[in-house]
Length: 435
Image (cartoon, rainbow, N blue to C red; front, side):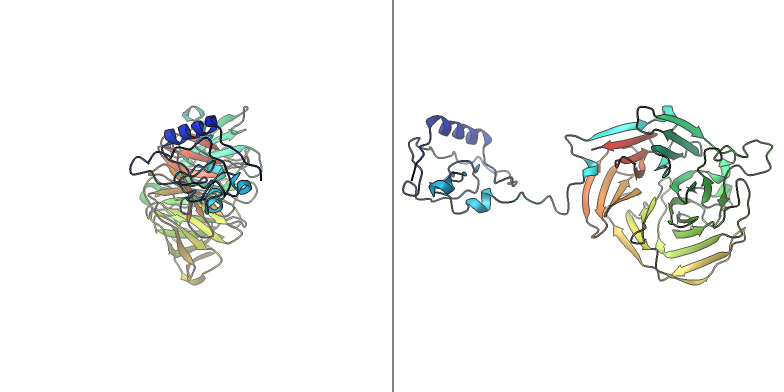
C-alpha cells in the first residue's frame, strides 16, 4: 500500500486554522458555543505516516473540521482515510451527514428571500396620491395594473405598469364615494370586469352599510354619472346593506358572490348581488345575504381583516385582528337554520347558516391583517409587528417569518411577477419584496 507523509507546512496551517477558530464544525451542523476555552489541539508530528499500521485509530471526528486528523486521537477524518484505512469509527456519521434540518417547522420560503439578497422596493408613495392605503389587488385581466384603496380620501390609486420603468399613477374618487366607498377597507376583483369593496363605516350612525359592487371598466368607474346634476348615484353597480363596519372582502369564485368580514355583527357573511342594477341605480331586491354566526371574528378599529378563498379546497381564510389569529371557514358546509329580517332594503334571501366547519387556523399573532395564498402556504401580515408570517395550509405550522419594518402593514398580494407586494397604511407606500 502506498503511504502519504504529512508535510510540515500543511500541518502548521491546519494548526493555525484550528487555533484561530477555537472550535471545529460538524459537517455543516451547528454546535452550541463552548462554555470555556477549548483545549489546544494536539501537536501533530510532521513525520507521522498514514495507515492502520501507523495509527491505533482511536478518537472521534466529533468536533473536528473533517479535513484532517481528529483532535484527541490518532484516527483521521478526511477523505483520504478511506484509502489509508485509518478513519475514525464515526467519520461517516459525522462528516458525511446531511445538513441539519432548519429550526422547528421552518423551511426556505423563496418569496421572502434571504438576508443577503432581499430588497424591499418602494413602488408607490404619497407622491403618487397614496393616502392611507389599506389594500391592493392586481387586475386579473390587464397586466401590471395595480389597484389600491385609500382611507384618506375614500378612493383608488391605480398604478399602470406597476413596478416597471413605465409606471404611472392615477387617482380616482367616485362622486358618491362618501357613501359607496366611505372608509374603504378592502378590495377584491370578481367576475370579469367587476370588483367589490368593503367599508369600515356606519353611514353616519344609521348602520345602512355593506359591500359594494363596482365596474373595473376605466370608462365606467368614477367616470359615469359624476356630474352634480346627475340623478343617479355615481358609478357603483350594486350595494347591499346588512354589514356596517366591514373589514374584509373576498370573491366567492362564482358570479357576483362575495365573502365579507362583518365587524359590526362580529362574524363572516356571504353576499350575492346576483344581477347588478347598472351604474348609479339602487334596486337591491334580488340580493342574497347569509350570516355565518359560528365564524366569529373581532374587529379592531383601523385594522382590516383581509380574506382569501382557496377555491380548490373551499377553505376561506380570514385574518382576525381583534382575536390575534387567522380562522378558516369551509364554505361547502353549513345549512340554512332560519330566516332573518332585513334592515332598510328588500332582499331575495336573508338567512342564518349553522353547522359550518370553522377552525382556528393560526395563532401567535398580534394583529393579523393581510392574507395571501401561494400553493399550500398562507402568507399573513401582522399590523402590530410589521412581520410577514408564512403558514402551511396542510398542517398549520409556521414555515417562516420576515420583519419588514413596515409602520402599518395591511393588505398583501402576489403580483404577476410572482413576488409579494404589500401596503403600508401609515407610511402611505406600496412595497414589493425582491427576494
